[in-house]
Image 1 (cartoon, rainbow, N blue to C red):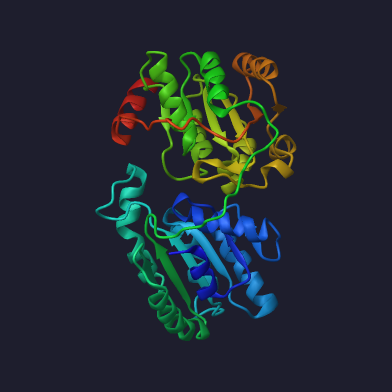
Image 2: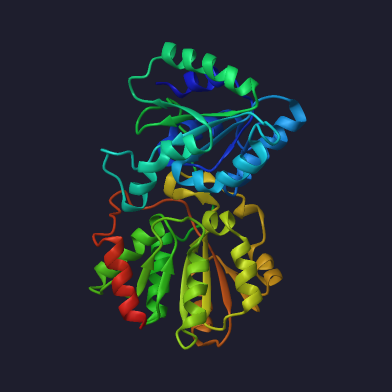
Length: 371
């Protein structure tokens, strides 16, 4: 189905959400049509943020907003949906567009398996009527369902379109790029050269995949690394939980800008506790690159100032490998909390693989290593 058919059926002129590879056609269409004009399209820090933005749009206009997300984001919307949007509270209508990763019977990565199993059940538990869009869904079927949904929306309830893999198409082409020169894989390679035997907690997405392949290329095992394959935005909190229990071990975090933004309060918690054994590296390409490249707001804000404001005593930003190596070595030798923002280009190898060990194996080896 052409994504324009879905857009026309929904009829909303405001979209907010967190990008998803399953919704690449929708995301590219919105960038092509609206860019990041906040009157029509806001890429949110997390899915709950998107729901609140949608609520504000409805309060200001009386019209129905649309929120897009990967199904992993359902957990982030439960609170605002149940305690704000629900018809027993403020009765704010909204159309959700949900990418169905880990659909039962469709091969996917381990972090999506259980989420895929409970995707429809979570919508039912939130009293959100839903309709699954497949490759063979017709425009007439979509129009009929949307007509039914309008009755539900008029009662102050929410509805959802759950999108199967490959169900939406967009003929346009959108190119995502920036002016930075360092690739993320080379950045991680430099990090690994400095960390030695120290444990690393890496964020979800391509960063963890690249870290895994770098260890393979170096002929090393993977016991030093905890790969945060799911729970986007929580790698730094996992690392803090480790660091306070292992004060004699230097703990490195390889974070992404989208992940750091998603739960930025974690930086405040880290800064307030001032663990002397954490090095927090944010690889900033200003994009949700793992799921397609849509922009984040990280290229428009000062992450170093934010880190310092949160209590990080040492924070720097680098945009070349010479300065990166200096910053990494200083952090390695320092007995103090450090943050390094690394300006990064958008893009990854076409043949980038995925971890060949299971998540359970990764956990068990990591536990044995740090103990």
